[in-house]
Image 1 (cartoon, helix red, strand yellow):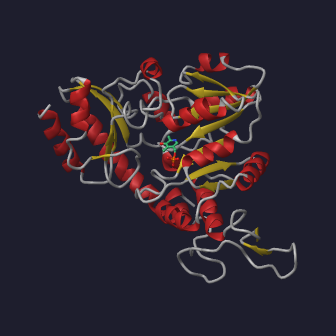
Image 2 (tube, rainbow, N blue to C red):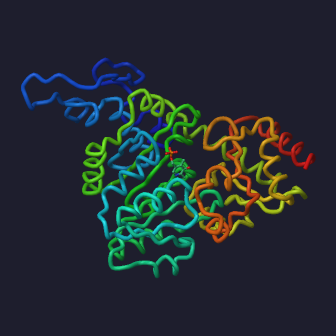
Length: 385
Ligand SMILES: *Cc1c(COP(=O)(O)O)cnc(C)c1O
């Protein structure tokens, strides 16, 4: 089965009991047992209490696993809840290597929450494999990768980075939110775990928040599944239903997202009011070669610096017709944000500077509108600068 078909027919598209063509919402907190301690088996899972198992969640987890071609999938109420689950498998005294250009919320959780719990972090430029390799310590347990990264679209060689982690006995995890499994499959490249904020492209319609973890490892799955239940990191069935509906069209949406983003990137990179465009699909981008090797296409996230001061750049971000000024990404509608005051406000200014995030940086998530409208809109706002 090819990806587009798998997204539609994979997992449990039908409810095995009612044969409903769209998997239903099991809105219940618990399940009755005929004999004490012998819960009913359904879809291969023992149904006792909805924190532990819920069929709507099981259906979503099976679909997510299909998309990444993983043996196991786990669904979470948010992307950060999936991150929490991973961090809760570690012990005080463990060391984590994370890429320096990563999602602001992950950086905040690592530095403000888990460092208080005795976990040590090193943030390194993972695009430089020598730097990555030299960051390992005796107690390094986890290597946290994100590619393309947020907000600068830096590209890490995931096969090489995962191999370095494996050689040193550490687990590698890739935040694959920007690329989606349609464009990039880190497990095939050797990563141990894949993470998604399903809030973004996988759901795709800006109407729910969610997260996911995928793995082929029995041992990692058992540990993560234990923490998911023990810490109550579970999504509600309504949200599972929406994400399971959204992901059916992932392939179609991603093709159009990429078509539109390529056109927008080309337009911006040739505009005389634009200083620099960060998009891995441009031959001038430093990660273009590796992106070409490990991704099917280049995604629909891009950032740019204007030839304007910070205040003008911020006004520009608020002046577009079809690009809504909002955090988040991966929705049908185009979104625009100013990372230094929005998604990356929790990253200290000197850290932002050191990783190359300028104070005027603009990030866009190119949606599914007509690309001509998007380009006209950007062109008008740029002329008004
Ligand atoms: C949004 C996002 C997250 C966090 O997910 P939430 O669903 O907002 O909790 C993690 N990583 C990346 C790359 C993201 O874009």
